Amino acid sequence: MTETKLGNLAKFLRSKNAGPFKLTIDIFFHEVGDYERVKSSGVLTRELVAGLYRLADKNDVSVFEFDQAAAIKITFPRTIPSGNVGDTDIYGAQQHGPLYDIVIP
Image (cartoon, rainbow, N blue to C red; front, side):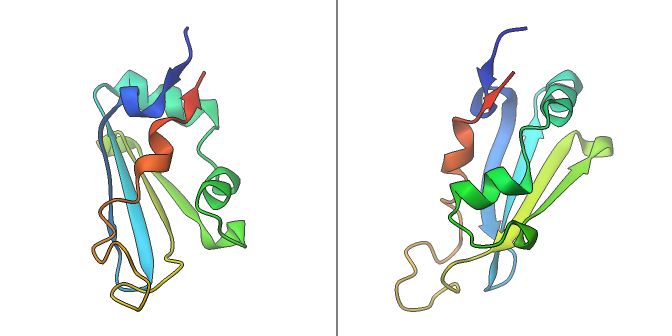
């Protein structure tokens, strides 16, 4: 199987606020096989997400796999609360970008 980017396997890859202090990223897949591929690769870890989003503690990251929906949800604290001074994305809708280029074996 050829390596490919997560963004090519995902049907939807989106981010949004999970309240004013957290972000959530939803990853839905075209095919159950794509979901299983990503899930079994072990690539989407708390350590990876903490590094991508410059979080000090990987334990603040949650990665949930939903077999019934062939989807993965990632939740972590916002570095700046929604709407606070310095916030550049009040709805958290533009925060999923760093995951697009993650390589899945």
